[in-house]
Structure formats: structure tokens, C-alpha cells
Image (tube, rainbow, N blue to C red; front, side):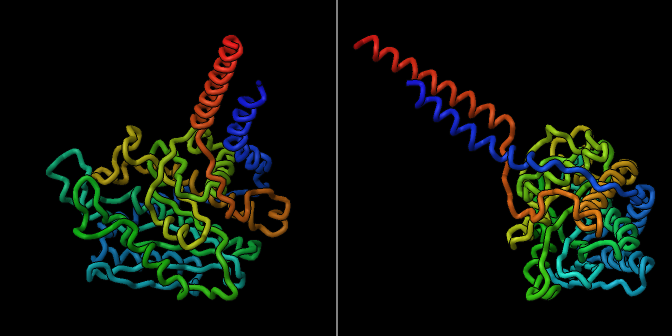
Length: 373
């Protein structure tokens, strides 16, 4: 009699727990390298963008910011390959900016962020501020700043890396409908969707292929704590979390983190078939960083340390997987297409309790039947 309920309980546990055993069977150990990412440099790049002004799609300030990226990459190497991807949304001129490193390799990883700032502070606590633009220190400038510093650092290692790296800056991400309207008629992530629609213009699909895409969004604010973003390819995001925790960033990459599905610039790449992960915070009800889409998203709430945590984690991830001579010994989750979509611990506990409860009910009913007989 015990076999039937025990079988169902065991089967339920197996289905839910097996993915944990599969991922945890690989013990990630960061390769031993000296990380060079500098949070103070990244902070200066955030400040530079804010000094340009509000980088709203269609404005001169937005164009000036794209040119600023070009200037910073030319400081690294004047001949750095770049592409200005021009497109329009509701007759507004927009522009993604792409830089390519190590084009002698066919396998590509994309490091990305958006750089536009929101036209209206729709969540500002002061009603009178809600038609004002946001400075976008964290929401836009922080991720872009990390990309610039990563480009400086990884360029010095390019001869030792076995991959092509794209540094991709999206325009027109942040104008969708929030508590009130953004720019009328706009959706979220217009720039990334346009880029993916025309992605064949930017690479040779016959010889080149994408390993992964990592998106950095709101990565420089004080009290940094990343969430488990559920649209992300779980094996890739889990690896980034593990890499960060191995570096000692256990508060920023918590074992018990908030899970949520966020429509962001990585979703278009996932739909295209590229493994992608979104490093992002809880921005909707976070008392430790309550400045999302407000006029207080300014330099006062940017942290050198948060920028450095993000940058060093991504830098370490690149070395783990692509540093020639060392990455061969590294055991991560590559190729990251295996999205295990791990359930939350609460779900496992709930299934275990329900399964056990049903098993007990079954045993009681069988006992009553035997007593009647």
C-alpha cells in the first residue's frame, strides 16, 4: 500500500529537485587572475554622461552621448571598430552604438546597456516633477559606464581572449508606459528590438555565432542587490551569480534573491535564440533604492563600489570562459542554451508538503477501507 503514495511523492520531488543537482554538479571555481576593473573610473564615466544632459531620444544631448562613447573608445584605440545603428521610432531619430573587439574570432559575446534617459519622471513623489526628465545616473548611465571601463580593461587582454566581444549601447529603451505615459505611443526596449530585427547586418551568420549576451541595467546604485530575472537564461544568470559570490560579493548576489520577470533589452535576444542574462535590481518597491523614474536618479545615489562589483564580476566571467590557457580548466555552464528554469525553494517545499499530505490522505483512506472490510 505504501508504494503508490511514496512513488508519487518521489516523482514530484525528482522533477523539481533534479535541476538543482544538475547545476550544482558543476563546481564553479574562478580562474586565478588579477582583476583590473576600476570603480572610480566608471564613476567618472557616469558623471560625464550626466554632464552631457538628458539623453532623451531625438535630442542633441542623446547624439552628444553617442559621440562621447566614440571618443572614449578611440582613446582606447583610435581604430576601434564601431557602427552607428540608426533607426526611427515615431519619426524620432534614434541610434544604437556598437563597438567590436577581437574580430578575428567567430564566437561572439555581447555586453550591453541602454544609454537613453526617460523623458518623464513618472514615479516622482512630487506631482510637479512628473513631467520633468530624469537624470538617469543609475538607469542608463551606470551600465554604459561599466561597458566603457570593461572595454579599457579587456582591450589590454585581447590577445589572451578566445572570443569576439561586442560592447553595445541601446537607445530608446526607457520611454514606455509607466505609472503615467512616457513618450506617447512608445514601448519599452525599442532600440534592442530594432537591433535584433536587423542583426544580420552586423555579423556574418555563415561563419560567426553568438555565445551569449549580458545586459547591465541599473548596476551602479547604492545598496546594490541583484535579482534573479526570470526571462534570463537561467544557466547563464546562475553562473554570473556564482562568479560574483566567489569574488566575495555575497550581499550583491544573494543566495535567496527576489525573482521577477522583467521586459528589458535582453528579451529580444532570447527570442532570437541567443542565451542572455539581465543583471538588474529590484526597482519597483525597493526602500534601499527608491529613485527609479524620479528626478532623484542622480549622482548622489551612485556607488563606486557597486560599479566595481558589477564590472569585476563580468570581467571575471570573461576570463573564466575565454582566457587562453586558463579557461580550459574552468568548468562553467557553457554553452548556456540549457535553460533549466529552476523553481524557487518555496515551490519545492510546497510540492513536498502537498505530495506528503496527499500521500497521508491516501494511506488514511486505504486504512478506513480495510477497517470496513
